[in-house]
Image 1 (cartoon, rainbow, N blue to C red):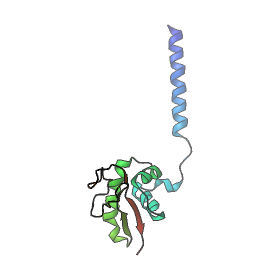
Image 2: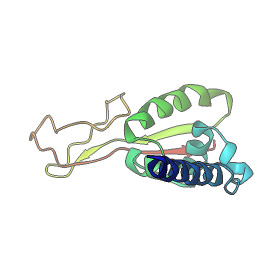
Image 3: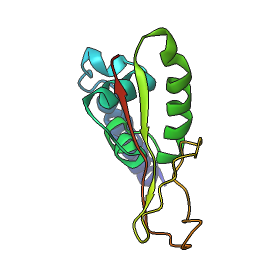
Image 4: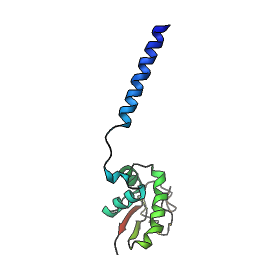
Length: 127
């Protein structure tokens, strides 16, 4: 009975050491302390990106990107920069979703009902 307890204690001590080593790992660079929206804006200044590309570069789920982009679009009027949206386009018939206000990807084309769509692209431009 005492032997089993000793093995469990040793295992627990090893796990605690690993957890402490993980917590005390290398510090990220100072630029990683930027907010998610600041990181998205920095990426959008480099050129047009889809929501999927933004999520991969910034490290957030793709579903959260639209909310951040909406907030960025509303707050840019103070900075003098413009938020540019290249609308989604149907890969089958070429229909362009020009009047769409939502920043999310449409599910299908209203003309041909195809689900093969090119995602909208987002970028920032200086005046």
